Structures are given as C-alpha cells and as structure tokens.
Image: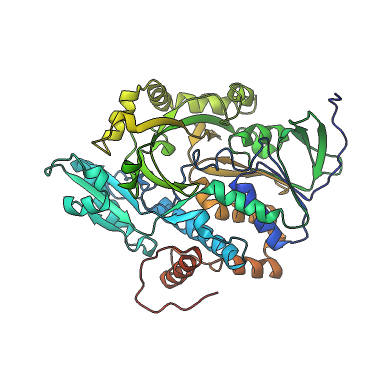
Length: 511
C-alpha cells in the first residue's frame, strides 16, 4: 500500500479536528452566520463524541455553578469569592439560549433527548464546612442568577430532598445543603450527535470518521495543510483550509505544538484520568433524584470533586458516584501511553518541570487515588450514602483530561484547571486546551473564538443581527440585568421544556 501523502482533494474553508461538542457548536454557529461556508470535520474514532463529550466520560452536570463548591473559594478574610461562579452561570445561560434557538428553528426536535431538569445540590458536614456553605449561599443569592437557591440544616427537609443519602444517619449529625430545583442534566454526547446530524443535511459539510490528523503546517499560500490518515484503509492525504480549529480534547496539545505557531510555544499538559462507581441496583437508583456535590479533598483537581449524580443516559436513569482521580500518561481515553512523553518539547520543558515541582501534593494525591482498594472507594461513597452496599456498585472508566500547563516567569510553569483558547496572531488557527467547565460553556467559548479569529466579520451588521437572533442577550450582561435574565430564563425554559423559578412580573415573549 502506498504510504505517501496524496495532494489535497478537498479544500474546505474551515477544518475542524475532533468531532466533540466544541467542534459541533462551532460548526453550527459558522453555518448559521455564513451558510455558504465549506466545513470538514476529521475524527480519529468511528463515532462522534466518543471521548470527552460522551455521557460516561463527561462530568455531564450542565455546569451552571449552582452546586460546584470549587467555583466559590473562600478568601483569606473568610469571605466567598463568587466571580467565577457568576461567570459560569452566565455562560451556561448563553448555551441555553443557543439551544433554544435551535429548538425554535426545528434543528432540535425533542430537547428532552439531551437536557432534563435535575436539582443541583451542595452537601457538607462538619461545623467548618457548614459555616462555609452558609456563607456561600448568602453570597451567591445576592445575585439574581442564583435566585431560587434554598439552604437548610433541617433533617426533615433533607429527607425530602435526598432520602437515599439520609438513610442510616443519626438525628444529631450536623449537615447542611443547598438546592437549586432548576438545575439540569445535559447529555453532551447526544447533543453533539444531534448537531452533526443537522449539519450533514446541509451542503458544504462533511464529517470524516476514522481519520487521524498526523501533522499541521502552513502552505506557501499561507493556508493550513493537515496530513490526515484514514485508519480504516491506511490511505493518507493532505487537506488544505483557510481556518483550522483543533478541538480534539486531550489530543489538542500535541497538534497545537505541531502547528509551530509562536503562541503555542511553552504550553504543556498534565493528564488526569478518572473512574466512577456506577450503581446497578434499580431500586437504589430510583430513590435518588439530584446532583449532589461535596467538597474536594485537599490537593484534589477540580474535576475530582465528589458527587452522587443522577443522569439520564440513553433514555434511562443512571446513578454515579465519583469521580475517583487517577494518573495515566495517555492524553485521550483511546490514546497512547507515550502521549505525555511525546508532548515534551524544548519550548515547554521548563514550564513542564516548573509545574511538576510546584504540584507535588497533586501528584501524591493522584498516586493515592490509583492505589485505592474497592473498600476505600466504598468508604468514600458511604460519606454520601451511608447504607451503600458493595454489590450494588461497579467500577466504570471515565474520560481522560489534560490540564493546561502555562509558562510563568517566576515559577517556570503553572498548572491551570480551566479552559484556554490559543490562537495565532492572524486568527487562522485556534486550539482549545483544558477541561472544566468545558462543554457546558461551549457556546460562550466558541463566541469568544469567533471574536478573536474573525474580528471584522463578527462586528458586521449581518453577523451582529444573526448573533442577536441566536443569542438574544448577546452584547448584554445577564449578571447585571435582572429583568433581562428573568425574561431569557423563562423563554429558554419554555423552549427546552424545563423548570424555572417564578418571577413576580408577567414575562413577555422576547423572541
């Protein structure tokens, strides 16, 4: 078989690498803004959303900062920093607007196929943690984005909210919880496949499975060339395009480094794996209906915040606990054990070593997690559900995350736990690195990418009008405008068939 790369047979205007929620979101946005644009997506696996976007691999909460305690750190003076929580809550409202637009335009027929109401709760025990949760509740509810949040330390009320978790607890046990009834469960795997199904109906769009991108480089005409291999038959070719988005999850970093853009130099990655305990007892599953988040252990990465999580997967209710963190040198669940080694370059080795030296507690924590026995994992579950039985739960491998390592003048390198868009100065190539909150804020992340890479077009009259149609709050702050926030929430709740907290004044249709 000829292993040489053939000359380009297709010349898309946009090349998207990775068939996950980020690429699907960007593709839909691009097609709505510029219907005639030609888009090609290349995915190394044989199905869309099989890595980070998959329901079993993704945190899947519909992260809106209602329950995730790591988004509201306690400051040195004892006050609660709500800035990140407010930003994430607002970003999730932007996602809801875009999905509602797609429902309105009949591009999503049944929103229940990917989004459901599931209460979001935070749950703590011990005086210090209870005091923290009370302060968090008081701080968050000053912002209307968190209107409707309830707080209690009352056991009777807790038994109504989380009956399964209250079994076997003494009446004198000090507990506290907050609850947001309008929380959601989002199956980003299903949503991704719905979006790609719609895109395939349009002209100028192609989705190539079993196609692995091996290299990226600039052509003499300044466009981007990608070397791609069809793993089903070994055929190789070069594809050329004007804009490239690398949305390959943990696989984004190696491809960014291969592009050679100056903006990508110095970035490294630290892989973190995960596991769930998955409940197999239907009677137990039916007794719990909430996403209940606790406090992370000291040294734990953000994606390892423990939670007892109700999900709807393939139309059926599921119950998970975890995730338990671990360490693997793979950058993807279906990746290679050599991924980490291959990612170390002269341009990022200083950052990688610096981050390693300053995160020894994290490394120690991950090693401890890997060494956990089934009894250790059950003990962690019993802090949430005291009556848990070993035979009702089995281990499920979760997704792989690659945390961003950035250059730092003082420390050499620092480990970041958010998401990072890295783009070239001319805006012709961009890559998404990192993990949390990721999928839940995909629309906001892709809007920021469009602003960065297409600054002239995004400010054009045509694009601005379309953006306002797709996201009615575009250009306005939902965090600052309570009435706009209420109006938007009521509209998106109707479109997505979700609950919302009641507002006092009558809400008018805004679309």
